Length: 118
Image (cartoon, rainbow, N blue to C red):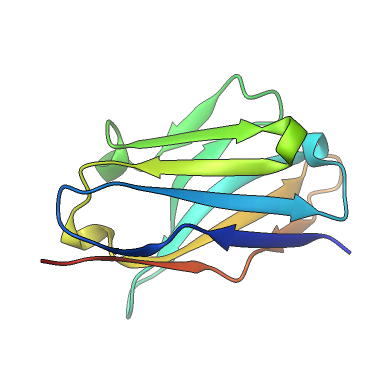
């Protein structure tokens, strides 16, 4: 069974940084496109960053460009989201999604809370 577990969230002050991690188990990591989403209370889920299977391309939410970096470590079955210069509007539950490229099946983690507040 494919399982995703996020970690690294917490409470930070504006301007601070966090590194979120998502570990995939139960499948071959290299078969998945990995994406970070977030959902703030009362708001629609939005894509924050995504990385393709070969790691050669990535996409970012416009408001996160220059502050967020997605990366992955295939040996550790882990995708990361480094968030710098955090703003209150970054406050949300951040979710990791794995999409199996060959059949389009998607899997979601449980989410990790990021709160940016003075």
